[in-house]
Length: 538
Ligand SMILES: [Zn+2]
Image (cartoon, rainbow, N blue to C red):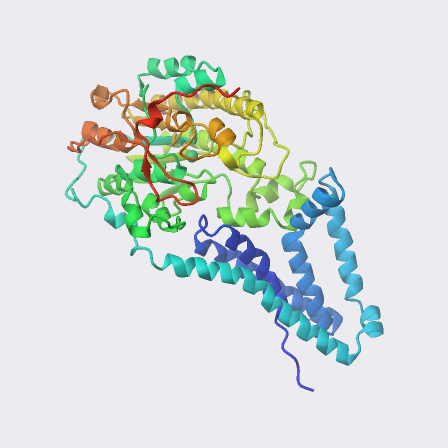
């Protein structure tokens, strides 16, 4: 009898990865799926081979291998469904019980006793055909989503988008004798002092005074150029507005993927690299600012997992092993960190450690850190105590933040208080240990999102909160002359390069643009609206 082809275990193994990717198409570069796909297929093949040897029955072996890999790849989802809908408040250790129960059930269902009793030769054939067919249908759904996204994206302008930057003054070259190290630190969502005062009843002047005492210039009327992280950071690093992306992608485009390249190959970095600088990236866990091709990539996790992998691990059976009381947890976390509150906190803490230690790295260097705080989720209390929000891990702010006004205010200010201490610590360490006085820029990419949370992040809401940012510059030896109270991020590197590298960049008008999260390139200018202060929410 001719052997039937068995392929369903491999397609089922692909499904959890393709499904996760198809739900995050606009955020995740497709290459990030390659490694997890490879390992899933490899595990399936290994289990299939092993069970074939043990059971001497390829159909039972395929069945067992398929459902072991499939279930272990998605068991956190099964646990969430059981915990969320069937038995509310089930403890996390029950994930382990579910795993053991499911494993025993699969062993039973694939046992010889069961198959001898119920699976005649004819039934075996039907069963195999059926599973092969179902596996094809199952992967078609995410594949359809993925294909339609990329067919639409094919209309976008040719990449790389970074080649559109600086076309007007391509001759710009940095030259300097002192060659100071440059630190650019983004504290995501860190708002301006008057916003914290008016909406959060928090007086941030002790922190700003402490910075000023150390020689910082504070942009007391600074506003972001864009209210979305990816646009704001891309524009600041490229020293220019990025509204040309609307022409490249179309204003209705949802595809952020070409922006990854535009952010990574930014103009500030290119100019500094041409001038002999090393680019040092402090990894933040944000997919958008993990520039893997940095000369030095500082990350808390040894295996340098991509964010997609961390998301994937967190849907798997690995989650059942992450109870703090288990001995194996810390070692496992270093190799397979899950996207979750612990990893999020680890990224923040490690970023501050890395910044404080950075002066020891060989220079001259451009050190870039994008720290996802005080932006939600709120994982650190004012004393640096770990917090664990009691809902599944999400990083959303504004309209996609899950909480009430009090929780947002408290969580946000708690994180600000802790950050303030850590910022002063690393600033002191950098100032003390740098041979040449360094340039330090500390900036919010946009403000907080309390009113966005209450009213939706759209144009009809008060935009003042989200637009007003912390903006602090340490320009040593009289370099602050080019700075002014309303300077915006698009001009940060123009000012720095003019002050220390003999360039003659024009300072751009400080303007602010709005676009919705889902259609990032559909820009509306809001420079005037963003000036109107908001009343605190009732
Ligand atoms: Zn942000």
